[in-house]
Length: 501
Image (tube, rainbow, N blue to C red; front, top):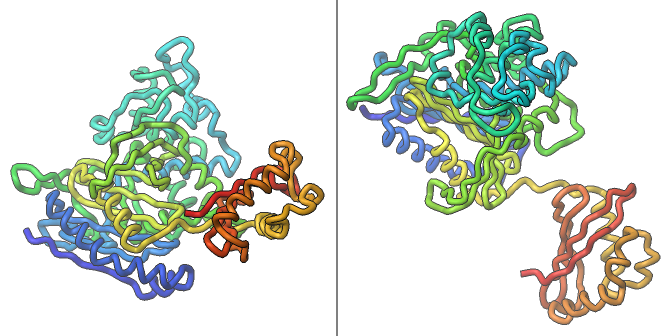
């Protein structure tokens, strides 16, 4: 079957984004779009995907979305950014956000024992006598001690609440005691859904619809496939015996909290944009269903999962990768210091992934309708390619007023250091750590190579109290690094000079 590729590029979206971001940055990213389209098309054909949809979020807006193949083979319905795919475990972070929304309302705490909200857990036998009670945080971070349960869990979507309670009442088989290690467990997120139901007094689906989806204007995201418009519902398939065989769709149920959501690229991009909006931290008005600080908390690496020292990017570039789990989110950081946050999803008939790079202000989403379609590989390749081709750099940290002030005061003292000890800009440790004569001697040696000082560059901040700038000299530049103390006002506690390369 020939795969037909379509692209949807909204001029309104582009105009809105161009007002929020740099036009030059936008043009560089736009120039990579044909490459991006080709990468998804080639990946679909190579892996026998019936259909695929994708979207690129840039600076809070859906910049590009597209699709190839078919959402339903029998009717030759083309896959598009409006097609409704089941996104499987991408649902987990939405459930986690529902828990944080209840915390925001003052109705629970993350370190509460889960049995406070599911009483049947109270008397459940533990693995060892010294095992702690399972907490909500354990459930959020896959640290409850439950076994990895993907093959079993993927067939539980339509399980009822009473079945979950029966399972708990009979006793659960643990692989570890709670709180000691990472092990991916869909069961834990089914319990989180039950907690949301019990605490909110309404089905977790209804609570999440009202508290998360409605504020984000996610009007097409649903839980039960029979509620989807027939022309938009993506059917799931497995590729077997050189043909596509349709998988039976599962109804919604208790385990939908771990993987039951059905959504489109258009709709889920709003959720991804909300996650990106938490960066960088700001004093702006809160407009989301939970606080931006809650979103950042979700994205933190709460539970270490792996170190892959031999990881290679899809283009073959070696780059070690460390991974961890947040609240319903996977976290990773590579050898280049790039942080990725998101989640994969896989069920019979479907595979998906979303990932954001907060420091770059970009994110990618892709849905496919083949069983366990591995979308993380292609999404990682696409993001890596966009960054390389567009020459993207991390969004710079804003320079605080105190950094600017200390930099200007420091430049005025150099290179003579005249009255430096009386200037009042250095912390009490500064001169005892190294005297003025020694500091002057160090700088003079560098000036002998770089030449006479002629000025300085603007600060480049590492954070609000640390950064670098260059002393411009007649024959080169000298890099200046300093960090400030926790005092108020903050004072220079460390200062280093080096020749710029």
